[in-house]
Each structure stands twice: as C-alpha cells, then as structure tokens.
Image 1 (tube, rainbow, N blue to C red):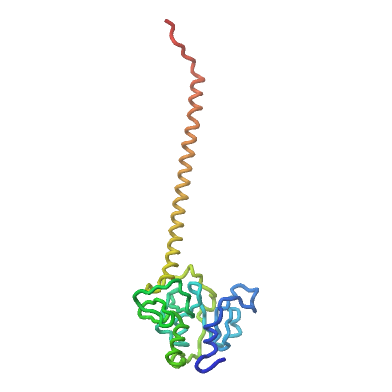
Image 2 (image 1 turned 120 degrees about the vertical axis):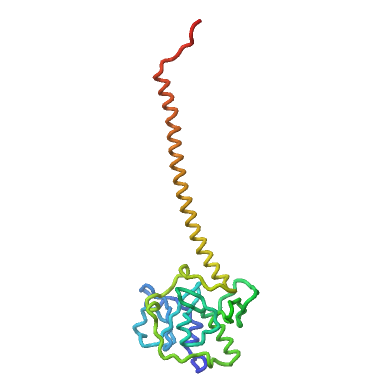
Length: 241
C-alpha cells in the first residue's frame, strides 16, 4: 500500500521483474516490459505508450543481465548520489537491486554499507535498493531521499529501444568492483583475438594446400616423363670383346 514515506511506484521498481513479455501484446515483437509508469505504478512495454502519454515514465535498461536505470532519470525522482555508476551507451547507470556475490573479497577501498560489496572510491552503495535500506535504517524513513517530480518523459532512445545487448556495452569505470565488468571486457577481447587467429590460420591452411597440390602434381609427372624417355630410346648393349 502506498504511503507518504514509501510510494507504491518505488515498491514496484524494486520488486517488479522487468523485460518479461507484455501479455497485452504477446503477438508483437519487442514487447518486453522495460518502462515503469510512475502514475499507474505499472510496468509496460513500448506498445503500451499511447495509453500513458501524459504520465511520468521511467525507462529501465539492462546491464550484465541486471536491471539498471540512468542516473539522469533516477536523480529526478530520488537521491542517487554515492551509488556506484557504470557506463553503458555513453550514459551513467546504477543497479536497481543488489546483485549476488560471486566470491568474498576483502581488499582495499570502499565497501557497500549494506552488502559489503567492494566498490570504487568515493561510492558507498552498490545499488539503489542498498541505499534505500540504509536510509530507512538510519532515518526511519525516506524523507530527503525522494524528490518532487511532476514531469518525466522518455528520451527518444528510450521510446524506440527496448533492450541493450550486454555484448555491446562499453567498458565500465575501473575500481574495486571491476571483477564482473573486467570479465566481460576480457571475454570480448578474447573473442576478437580468436577471430583474428582463426582467419590467419585459415589463410595459412589454404596456402599450404596450394603448395602441397603443386608439389604432388610435379612428383606425379616425374615418373611418367622418365618412363616415356626410356620407351623412345633404343636399348644400349654391352660391347663384345
């Protein structure tokens, strides 16, 4: 239930499973629900936009298979400071929910106040949900965290693009939490290197095949010419003494 301290749209933002197919547009392509209507507290797909033109709309994106939102969009609704951002398509984004830890690592640098994930300085939260949990625990509410926003429209990119493939994302800021992001960068680099090596090997194999064929052809002709010369030459007898 919506309250002044915790609005219903924020609860939907934290709990909704975005990028599922829209049931009202099952037969249409690009029907992933990647937009949150702030006024209706509902996730919608791009084909539902005509019914929500005058509403406040928040675009949800994907980064490393997790839901994110642009810092520029989220800052209009709430305080997104001190949350570690990442770069995708030249835009800063923050994770909506806490991500599972792949391994426990305690090195130098900052750590998330809520889940102890290693972070880049000066950030102290890894996701929006971690900051909300910390604010509620410290302040017993969200006063000062939420911003008054009476107008929020999608950008041209958000209105036409439903998802962003992870393989095309740009490299993120380097820092303590760069393990996952460095993995993706290395994976892309290894894929490119493999393709180059594969092309070089294919070219070398083709060249070797041509040379082998030429040599085999020459060797096969040599015995034939030799026997032809012996056939046309009169036999030579040993002299009689």
